[in-house]
Structures are given as C-alpha cells and as structure tokens.
Image 1 (cartoon, protein in one colour):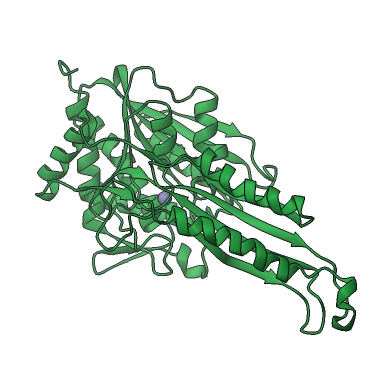
Image 2 (cartoon, rainbow, N blue to C red):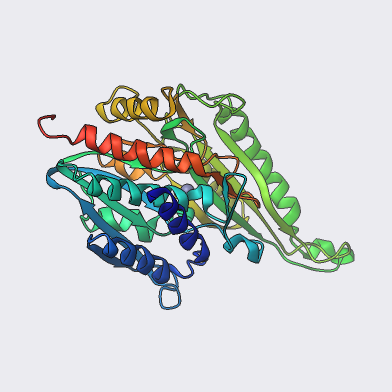
Length: 395
Ligand SMILES: [Zn+2]
C-alpha cells in the first residue's frame, strides 16, 4: 500500500518543474511536501532564504521531524532539478518497473523514499530515542547557497546532538563517503577589435587567450598527476582535474581582429586538495598576465569544497548493515566524482553519507529514470537505519 502511495508522491514531485537554474516553482513543490506531511499529522517548518532574483523565484527549504529525544539524525534531500529539455520530462510514468521523469534519479524518488521512511516509522509506532530530521532544500544543483548553506548559517542545522546525515543522491548501489570539490571560472579577455589590415592598432584577444592557456596547461600537467586515496568506482579516474574550454566564445568574423575572447576553466579537486590553495594558484596566473597588460575579468560560476569521511563510523556501519538486510549485500564505499552536499555537514563536524536509489549515469540524462524496486528498498534502508541508530538504550 505504502509502495504505491510513495511512487504516486514521487510522480507528483516530478510533475512540478523545479528547474534550476532559474529556481522555478519552488513554493509549489515545498507546499506539496508540506501538505503531504500534514496528511500524516507531521508538521513542517518552511524557511525562506534570499537568493538571486528571489521575487520571481523565491527560495524555500522545509524542515520536519519524527521522534522525540535529544539525538538528531538528518535525512537530507534536494528538490531542485536541472532544466528539462523536453516537456515530457515533467510527465512522469512507470514502465517495465522504472519510474521516468526529470529528477526521478536525482533525486525526487529518493526524497519520496525518505518521506515514506518516516511514514513507516510512524505507522510502526517506532519509539525512537531521538529525532529523524527531514531537511528538504533547493538550489543544490547550483551550489546550495540559499539552501543548505543558509540553514547552517542560521543555525537550523548544527553539530550539537547530531548523530549524522544521510542523503539519497544516485549512488549506483554504493555509499559515497567523499566528494570532489569544484571551482568553475568564466575567463573573459578584452582586446580591441579592428579590421585585419589595421591589426597593429588592435588587441587580439584570441592570441592573448592562447598565451594564457599555455600557462594554465602547465598547471594542468602538474595537478593532474595528483591522485586521491579514496576508492573510486571502476572506470573513474583518481586524478585531479583541470579542464579548459567547456565554453569558448571568440571574435566576430574572419577578417576582424577579435575584440573579446572568453572561455571556461573547470577545476575539480580531490578531497586531499585544498580549494583556497588551488584557487590561489589559478588567480596568481591571471594576476601575472594582468601585470603584463592583459585585460582579464573572471566570473566564478561555482565553487565548493571537497570533503571526505572515513569508512569507520557508527552511522555507516549501521547503514551498511541495513543495506545488507534489505538488498542482501553490504555496499562498497566510493568517492563521488562531483560536488555533494555532504560537504556542508562534514565541514561542520557531522558524519554524512550518500546512499540513494538512482544511478549516476541516469542523473541529468535525457531519459532519466529509477528502478521502482530500488526506491522501495531505499525507503526500508532509511527506516531501518534510523530505528537501529536511534533505538532506545543504544547510544
Ligand atoms: Zn542531486
């Protein structure tokens, strides 16, 4: 019974196009979750946060909890999704045991599994010595400033009495105990456009970009020799990453000296590297070229710390046992190749792990889907983990 209800709830969530950017339909989604919880007799608190263009796109987080007691276990999920590329992305359906739609894997079905884990604990009248705190956030896909970061800043989430956090990112059957950090830059070089025959009077932004890229490629060579000690999924690289040219725009015509040139730089750091240090290295290069007269303007598109936690922790032991009980096998621990909101919790001294029903290959894909059975399994895993970790008499 709960299974059907949970999948219907996941579908209702997918129907609301919470596309980010720009951060659309957030209020409708938060209201849907809040009303759903109210049907279970669970109250929720809605937290507003300032954000870019927040008149048109208000930012909202939702907090709710089940259980009583001092200890807090956080169930943390984001409800924003990357933009759909087809209207069908927001018309969810189930076919051959899979739920399709934007956010099915990342991570609306996982969010539904967490809500229904709470519902299951409530129906079983599980007497917990502690609370399972549901933290539902926006803006994860664009850095989490008006979501998770805001909740920490305002003290809605804190280290005191925390036993840990779980989040349902699409972990492909593994548990993620670490994530890469990122700094993504848009580099704009300003030159002076003139007709090719007058090129001595112009400033060629493209040729300047080539010089700058040479210096950046030397950094690439050094940093990409570094390898993480965290376990990675087979086929994935342990090496640190610096990639140039994801976006590259330049010039107006073949016979005009290019008056501007812009390109992106994507730096993905390992948990062993330090974001501030890596940022300094890059900015020192821009400064060096500025001193030589190059007009460089840098826009930071996103930045986030890398983070990691050991595999020897009570929360992850309980989680692994719950997975074994439900799915028959203990999960492997792996590094998430992308940014992950466990970083906010780990920076604040709260153990945090991701384990969710989707697969990484499905996240952000045009045919995003999730196996319904995995969603049901995850709801069991979350409920079991909470009841085991917070059961009375266990500290
Ligand atoms: Zn996600």
